[in-house]
Amino acid sequence: MFRPCIFLFALIGLIISVPSFSAQSGRLLDESQLAAPRSPSPSQLYDQAKFYFNQLENKSSLARSRENWLKGTRNFRRVYLLNPKSEQAPACLYMLGNMYRSMYERFSLGIDLDESLSYYKDASRLFPEHSLADDALYSEALVYLEFKKDPKNSAIALEKILAQYPHGDFHSKAAEKLKVLSKDYDIPLPRSLTGSSQINQLNTIHPVKFWSSPEYTRVVVMSDSPITYNEVVLKEPQGPPRKLYIDFKNSYIHPDQRRKIVVQQGFLKQIRIDQTRADTVRVFLDVDKIESYKIFSLPNPFRIIIDVRGAKQSNVTASKKLPVDQPTISSPAKPELSKLELTGIQQKTPSTEGEKQSAAVVAVIRKDRTKRLHPPPDLPKEESLPKSQGKLSLAQQLGLGVRKIVLDPGHGGKDPGAMANQMREKDIVLKIAQVLKPKLAKQLNCEVILTRNEDIFLPLEERTAIANTEEADLFISLHLNAHPSQETRGLETYFLNLSTNAEAMRVAAMENATSTHQMSDLESILSDILKNSKIDESSRLAKYVHKSMLTGLNDKDFGDVRNLGVKQAPFYVLIGAQMPSILLEIAFISNKKDAENLKNQQFVDTVTNEIVKGVSLYIQTNTASLSASP
View 1 (cartoon, rainbow, N blue to C red):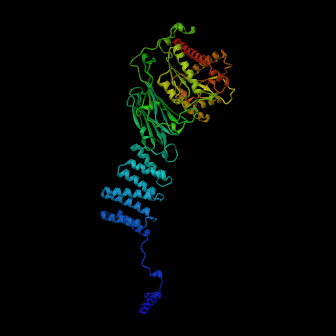
View 2: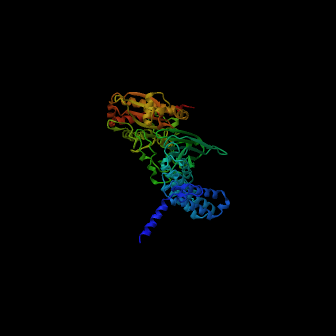
View 3: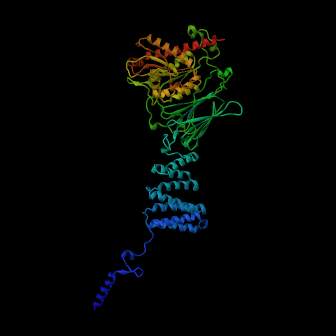
C-alpha cells in the first residue's frame, strides 16, 4: 500500500535533482538564473519618483492635474514605507515637503501647506544627523514666514540651524535671515549672533543713555566691542541744522530698546533708536539748532560719546545762571530705570556679566527754567570777603562769577577705587566731598552739587554730563592716589591735556581703568576735543588749588606733604567738560603716613579749607582781570 507513495517521492526527488536545460541556448541554467525577477531597489524607486516630480515641475500639462501631484507624493511615500531606515528615507520626507509646498502654490489648499510643514519637521526630527536636516529646517522657516506669515515660528526653526548645525551649509543663510527678521519684526537675536565681531555675529548695542539741558546734550552708546560708525547732519532749508543721526555698523539692538523718546523740555527734542538694517543700528537726534558737535569713543567698555551743543542765549538776563531743580530721570519703559547703571563701566574692578543691564533708554534732563526768571543768589557782602577782595569786581556785580560748582567724589558702588591699609578710596573721597560742599556754598555763596552723595556707581562720562547739563562754572573731581612703592606720598593736581609724562599717564590709566597703550590711542581724539576746551582756565584753577593745599597742609603737623606738582593728562572724567575742570589726587592711600592723615578729621578739615581758599583765589583773580578789562 505504501510503495506507490515511496515511488512517487523518489520520482519527485529525481526530477528536482536533474539540471535544468535552456532550449534557446542549449546551456544548463544555474539557480540564480532560475530565481524570480528582482523588484526595483529603494534607490531605483527614489530616482523614479524624483524623475516623475521633475516632470511635474517642467510640464504644465501634467502639473495642471492635482491627481498627478498626489500620484507623485505616493511615489515618495511608497519608497519611505518600504524601508524607513534606508538611505533614501530622509530624502523622501524632504521631497514630500517640497511637493506639498508646490501643490499649495498651485492649488491654494491649506491642507497641502500643513502637510508640507509636517514632512519638513519629520525630516529634521527623525534624521537630525542627515545632511538634509538643516535644509528641511530652513524650508520649514520659509514656509512659516512666506506662507503662514508667522515670523516667530520661522525664527525658531532658523535658531535650530544655528544651534545644531554650526558648520552646515545653511548656517550663514539662517543667520542673515534672522537678522532681517529681527529688523522687520522686532524678534530678538540669539546670543550666538551677538556680542562680538566674529563671522555672522553682530555687536550688541546696550541701552542708550543721555542727558540734556537747554543748550547741551550728551548721548552715550555702549557696545560689547569696538564698532565702526558714521554720522550724518541733515541740513535745513533755512537756518542751522536740527537733526543728526549716527549709524553703527555690524550692530544689533534688542527689540525692547528700539523706540522713539519725545523729550518735552531741554535742548534735545527727540531721540530714536532703531535697527534700520539687518546689521545697522541708527541713533537719531532731533535737537534745537546744532551749533557744534563732537563724537569720540572710550574703551573698557567700548562706548561712543556724542556731545551736541546749541547756540547760547545772547541776552544778558539769560546768560545769568538761574537756579534749577535736581535733574529728573525719564524712563519710557520701566520705573526702576532711574536706578540702573550702564553695563560694566568701572575703573578698577572688572564687571560681571550679571551686572549688564537690558533696560530701555535712560534719560537725565535738566529743565529750562528761563521763563521763571528767578533772581540770582545774593552776592557776598564786602566785609565777608578777604581784604584783597573787599571791593566787588565788575564781573561779580554783573553776576558773571562762579554760581555753581560740581564736586565729583571718584569711584563708588561696585568700583572701590584704590584700596590699601584697610581703606577704600571711594569712601574717603565721598566723606571729603560732603565736608567740602557746605564750605564752598557758604564761603563762595554758590550752589554746590555732588555727582554722588552715596555709595553708588557712576560711569565716568556721566559725571561730566552732570556738570555740563547743570551748567556748572567749575568741576572738581576728588581722588586718592596709589603706588606700588609704599614710600611714595604727596599731593598732585591734574587738568585735561595730552601728556608725555610716564607717571602722569600711569595715574590717568589707573583712574580711567585702562592701559597706558590704550591711553596713547586717545591722542588723536583728544587733539580735536582740546581745541575748544578750557585748558588755560583749568591750568590756572589747578595751580591755585594745588598751591593753597600744599601750603596749608605743610603748615600743620601732617608730616612732609611732598609737592608732586600740577600735571596734565587725558583723564576720561574731564573729557568734554564745558567749564574749568581739575582732578585732585589728595594723598596716597598706599602710604602709611598719608593713610593715617586721611583718618584724621583735622586733615580732612584742612584739605577742604584749602580747596575753598584756592578756588576763591582763582575766582578773585579771574573777576579782577574781567573788571580791569575795558
